[in-house]
Image (cartoon, rainbow, N blue to C red; front, side, top):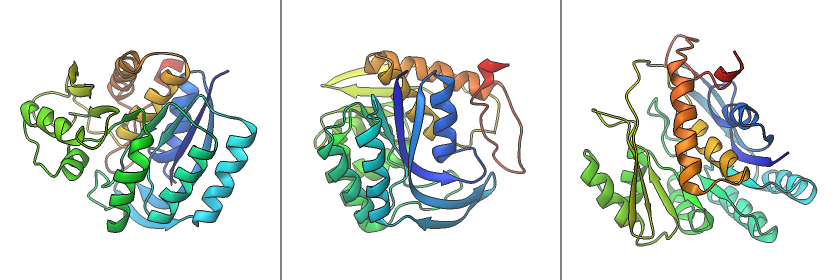
Length: 260
């Protein structure tokens, strides 16, 4: 069985964070492990509290996992402080980890800021360079590139700007575009588009977490980056189209819709 590690925050309501990641990893037939970076008090209506783990405890969790059950792929989500980022980078380098997917979680869909200001630079300069793939949404791509993005052409311009300092695979998610949900992959100067249709379902809590962990799972299974993204897009579309409806706000996806 292929192993996938998620390094991310916890969502007590189960729709995002490590809970979404572990469900997704299991749905892909992989063995999921988790290193928790923060506890969040949140549900479908918003984020109501964040408690970071200490950097030392994050490092302890990482050493326990990496020294005993080395993963074939790693997904990294919420990392909200410089010290936590430095702890992760230290351990990933020490264990020569590969197939790293970084979802640069900065702002929740509800609008809550999930990263400290001084951690932004550490994320961009220390963690992102280690990534095989980064998966920013439009808002995160704006913060990373310093550009506003409203059109597909601006998505391309932003990807080129990000590529000036990051030479891995850049996947800018277009789910917040008005007309469609097409994603852009920019790699090595080449542009690839992954088409996606808007699905009439407001319940999309945890979509970014789910996509990045699905990509990591596909990489662990031996697929190429392009194949992993295409497979993950199909999986996400099915999880949203299932139209599970839980909670009073923006509800979660059905990560195990294929088990029905």
